[in-house]
Image 1 (cartoon, rainbow, N blue to C red):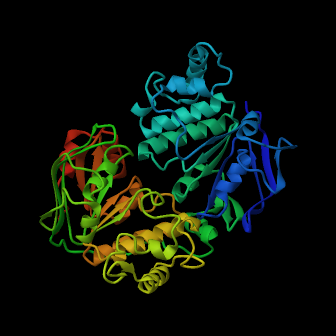
Image 2: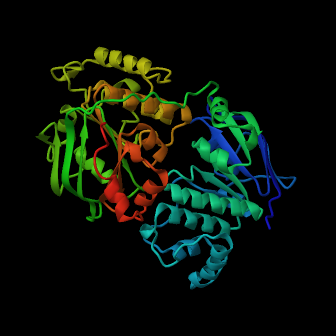
Image 3: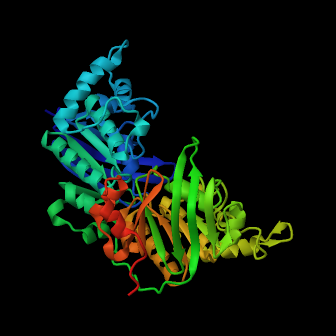
Length: 517
């Protein structure tokens, strides 16, 4: 039975310099509750949870457990009081087994031969909560859902009564997400408390008992689940109505823009990450690539954009082979790229906003005169991008690293669209963004389609793929196991394809171009 009967955070305030991240925030959580914590990027959710987990100290306010005020100076203090956090990016050692990872976290394990005692405790927790996982498997051999179960088991073995889950379904298939929800409901029934952070409003409404919404570092409301719907949640988050109905018009299939034939690409460890992949994309078409992370999608994108060498096969853009050229040449030929890691590969974080607006384009005559940059033209371009794409930035001179994730993604999108591409390669373009930024980015991609641009959209968000795509392909272990036309989109079937469990008749029925009639 849970030791934690009631948790309160009272009047929590936290500042970073002149920026107020949390302002007099109060919330509470009873044993057996699942509390949804929502807010836009920068609303203060992460700061608040880092305070609860002992990573930050509040400037004022208090944390009260079972009626007694506590002070957390480190995560060890939080864990000692029954609070555990499962991060969005798992904290596991890939080259060790499940049991070895558990033993490293299990404080009661003896110094010599710790896996014996840890293994016995692991078995009891697996049976009690239905967290099935092979203890002898190496972490790198597990799916994202299985790795998440290991993280939950680790947290429970540390004695957690309260679990904080940050975007827990961002890398899961629909089936794995449903499995997670079953586990969380069972944990809540056993008396555990859960704080569930997500941008997926349907998930919050399906699993949470109450929802607290933050905006600009303050609580704007806490409501029971039955009092809410998707539109009301979005309105609370952004302070205005959000239109969830994207305008998606019918577009005629134009000429072929990209053709990939027999593509083979090696991964960073020398393994075959892309094996014999074939597809084509036409003008005015959004071609989606679904799959659990690590099944070759990243290597596919890097090969097409010139960032990774091609071992075999052919890539052509409007009939011109681009299997060998550098990224800069491919960019000049009309390929724009929204990378998966927006900070690492999409921007130069230390450079000002205006310089980031012309990355890859700075050598063009409109931005350079002979060997010198034309900063007047560059700054005019930056102001146009800022206004057109509604980028909230205090000045075009500020470093990009000071912007929110949503504003950085709008910058990248604006820059890549302004280049006038014939092909846009978008990899996880809305990953980690709040509901307003997500809808904006999706709407802009649809507008590109209407202008005749071909779009290759790689995403693990099936809702996004279903909303935007004309066809969806599924990658599993480097192979493209099927291509589904829009009229045949089915959440369960595509989820099965993502895990390699789809039956052969399904794959046969899914291949091919959508019916144009």
